[in-house]
Length: 138
Ligand code: 2F8
Ligand code: CA
Image 1 (tube, rainbow, N blue to C red):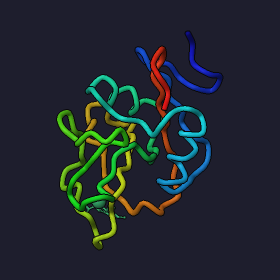
Image 2: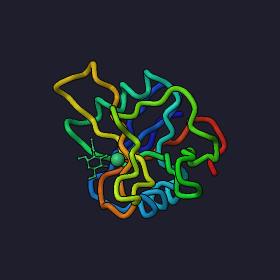
Image 3: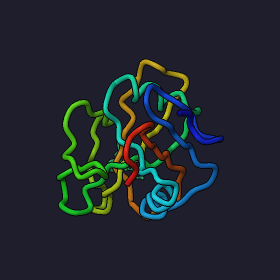
Image 4: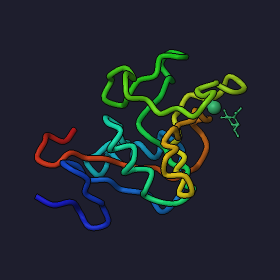
């Protein structure tokens, strides 16, 4: 089985980097309409792969604490556990209005994979969808 046109394969999954910007919820809906969801990051290897998608990009990932402040959950309902890749000092819930996680990709420093920041969910930025190959699609 292969990934749809415009999606990139990494190990057993397909990834889509958007070409426009949307809020976190709108981004998530876009992914769901494609049988996918916002990306859930399970390993350091996957974090490194995402970091190489582009230079100095900001995109939504499938991580939020909208339900309960400080309780970071992936869009599949699991709690954020290790590994986690927050930037230093994040998440900080700046202005008490930051409940969605943004991935900030760097190119200049491939060593620095600490790339997550919490930001306001209504920002319109890029997003990345993920769907697993040969698995049920919800
Ligand atoms: O725009 C909100 C954003 O502002 C700063 O980053 C530019 C904060 N960083 C620090 O305070 C180090 C972010 O936490 C915040 O999300
Ligand atoms: Ca923040």
